[in-house]
Length: 402
Image (cartoon, rainbow, N blue to C red; front, side, top):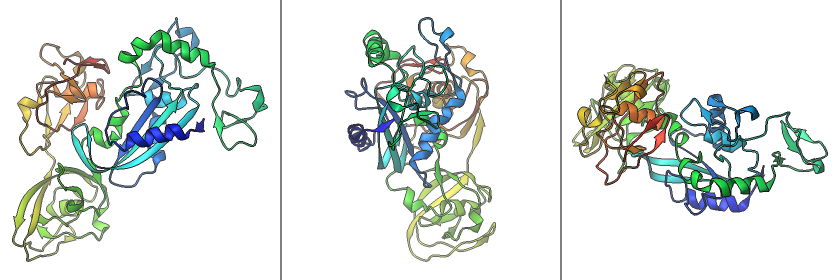
């Protein structure tokens, strides 16, 4: 694999759009692309690359005897295509870029300061019906010009600072592209599906991860700001808390939540409600935190525990918490297991990534890859205003309507 400045340039241009989707459309037929985004505490770019690779845990490699003539694609998790693109044998060039995106829309959730990573690969991987690499001993098919060099299970040429993948014949890739071009448009594994939701480790819960020092004022500048995941150990932080019950906007979100009794020092989720201006803020000592008083007018907020609610496979957002302006989270719901088997007449799904509020919450969560059918689990829901169109697709065994 070698660095390619043209791929870097195209990744930089796409990252600058701050669009949480694959693109641009005119390049996607010829490049592979992985996306990652985070905000809150610092994470190096390698965090996302490792997350892409870690999908290997859910991927089952198709051995030659299983490919008759096309190889099956087996992924037991929400997505494996980031991993397969990373290791795809014929992809031998890469270019990446990072951009700071203000108020970036991640599936309806606004992230005030998102770090957006785009990596482009060429030639593209994730060809339908093919394995990502040939089965065999590492470095057993390296070009003769490499002199038998092998490092970290990759072909290596002495005197080069780069590692190169085992090459495949260009004719094979081109032939696949000609034969499968129509199928790739509709079933290509190179789609904007799950990881983009999985660092969505945090975005799966649609809550924003914040450190003990983050103030509400830093997070709420024209954005939806009502659910946060606080890290542990905030009692030991020296971040300020201003007020009691009603807190001033310069207060630490997490320490205010401890002061109010919404969470303890182990951290957790907290809901925030903006309350407008108050004339003064009262100091007090609660739950191990001394707050400060302030006797001048300022904007305020209150904090509360995140509500939880058990639902059935048929429950919809329209039934539980219809959209109201300004947008806010519904209670955190717990989806039961095996909702994929729920009646399609009573548990329907409309849309992809953004769903109609008459959709089954739990089946939409399965479709989006937020929970797994055999496990169920917790889901965060954010109602947003109506859309004119919804797009149907088949993901994770669930077919959505449009």
